[in-house]
Image 1 (cartoon, helix red, strand yellow):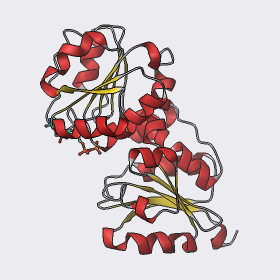
Image 2 (tube, rainbow, N blue to C red; image 1 turned 60 degrees about the horizontal axis):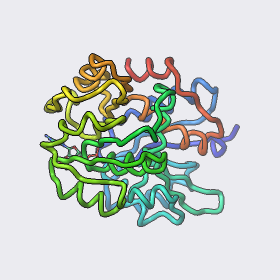
Image 3 (tube, rainbow, N blue to C red; image 1 turned 60 degrees about the vertical axis):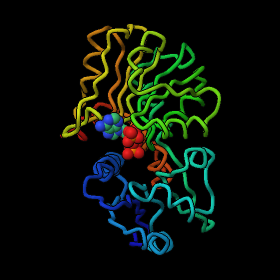
Length: 277
Ligand code: ATR
């Protein structure tokens, strides 16, 4: 095989050292015996257009995109998937064979695939969902929940204006509640999602009294360090089905790997162990 045939992919961000994507894709490349490489690249915002122009010429099939470039790449892309347009950000770019740059956002499908794999009895249609947070992750998750036909979504964020902006974007099935009132709504919901960084190692705890939470509610967290957050431990103690956030990271990577390396990768226990090492 000549060098030109070796498929390349990677992740661009600034900074990039913290990214877990190289380990994830590296594991799959090894598992499927693919002679490709997945490379972390620290790219300044001012270099973004130039880099995205050069990478396909250097043998790259595509890249993941992380902070701070997830929104900016939409201005550079030639083709934008409906869900990336709806979310207003992309995390997966593909350099198409016709020379066009395709931008997609797989965070929402990663979120849903994680729940379907780990809580197969979860029925999105069974009742309202409560989403904590209104940042980029919340945007992808709200879009995905609406797509899965969750009847309505309660949205609570410390900065209420950001929740109002999301409501304005997504419409009638989303209603904003006050951050301080979230605990009072727990009895009404069948899905609870923490999309904030609260509860992450080194951050503040999420202080949400769970007295009104019932065991009919599926509870999930996008935080995966620690794997079992205080929210998930508290919900588990109340008899709820709980799903940790690691699977969302793993599943959001599937479409990119498939497009770039031509193999649909599996998310399994083996992969979880590799990522937790
Ligand atoms: P991401 O793109 O990962 O969602 P983000 O856009 O910075 O990141 O959003 C982080 C979320 O965590 C926001 O909902 C943020 O609330 P604000 O909009 O009020 O900033 C929430 N968050 C972070 N620290 C928080 C804290 N100490 N208390 C409450 N919410 C917090």
